[in-house]
Amino acid sequence: MRINVSYATITHRFEKDVGKILSVISSIGYKGIELVDAHYGQYFDKPVELSRLIASHELRAVAIAKHANLTDQATYRGAVDSLKKLGDFASSAGFEKILFAETPMEGRRGERHFKMLADALNEIGGYVKDRGVHLTFHPHTKTTVERREHIDKFFKLVETERVGFCLDTAHLTGAGVDLPKLVLEYCDRISYVHLKDIRTESSLSWDRRFVELGSGDVDFPAVFEAFEKIGYSGWHSVELDNSPDPDKSAKASWRYLKKLGVV
Image (tube, rainbow, N blue to C red; front, side, top):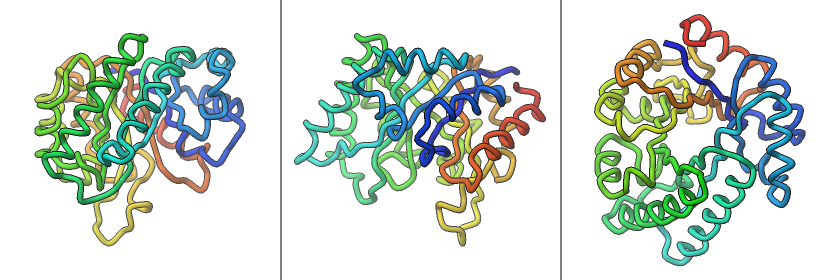
């Protein structure tokens, strides 16, 4: 199995020179880019310039990542409208997707939280779809949708054509989810993948659990086998939250994917 691989720039979020980051990622071999707000935010009023910069490094503008709270009534409408504006920007800059994850905050799993989140994403997803952008939702540690039962509940509330499923291999492994089984059972909903590794040892703090691909407990061969079974041909984006040497980490994860024979 050969996969389309992009890289998420959260690892490089303290580097402000976007062109420098793109140059490194492209030189390693990645074919696309997922930008975080520290990077795409610099171009919010000049999306075409960002599009040209990405293309100049022979990369695809795959996704822009955004966290927000959509389960607080006081800030709900403002957050929804802000994400719609982000859709306008993504469309103008030529991005394929908006990757949305909730801002981590535990204790938001009542019926109203699931409904608010689903209603918001159905509205946003429909809006950005009309602009040629796909909204994909990322279940995340310490948020409304974290474990398998939350995933099952949430995806019954959102419309398939408006809201896709970003499967993050590390967050779901950390939540005890059987990844190959999930891939097979959600084959018609998965629209994006975060390739991320995690050490599941409970004594580690969360910021130390996430590691370079092949250094943790995710069974990537089994995951890729499941993706091959369902014929998934979308983007996989390598992600790592923190690294003392972001360039070195990006190279290490690429080497692991080459070792597996998927790139």
